[in-house]
Image 1 (cartoon, helix red, strand yellow):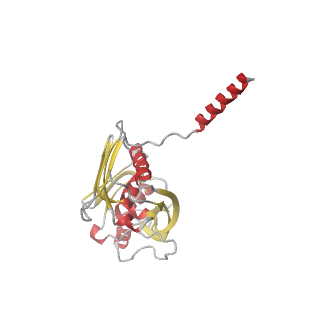
Image 2 (cartoon, rainbow, N blue to C red):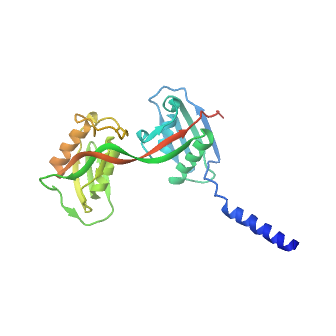
Image 3 (cartoon, rainbow, N blue to C red):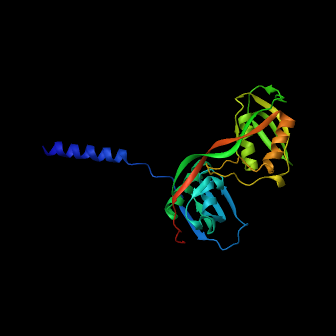
Length: 254
């Protein structure tokens, strides 16, 4: 009887151990300090096994941790945009890439008591479609895609329109989504409008009816796309991934 009870107890313990969630990757050592530098001097750098951040707001740090732009991080207390921090963190091994950013997420949860969740919101943006005149570029054989920009000139090799839309969103600060239905890839060159005309970051207010300021960078970009590539931008609501901050507390310096 005792053997049976002992066997059951061991079996239950084994099951509990198997159900214990794995520990989230974390830095071996990390220092978080309040920065007293004025805004405008923020910077961040990562190398295998280490992360260095200077004079950054918690909103900016959270955006980096989750691979988003700052305008995609919503909610949180008012000091999220006013208090600035320096972070020096090192991992036990040469962690890099996604693992390093997961470690930063763990650090935020530990030091800032950050609790957040992801949502998808409809935000004003543009759909990339073919103009009435038709495409001004020819499809090529698929291969490794490459998009690079130098001195305002974008050069693309074997790039899809989805690649182009994603790159334009990243560079311009306006939301662009491939709505053409075309899956072919192309080689092309695009002379971009001067960045001085660039508009502000898009709003994520789903109640807004404005796609973007028509006098901003978006208008100049639309003309460049139509004239050079036979594409155009149509104002529409674009699904946007956002991170909503549910809770955050100021950290105790160490």
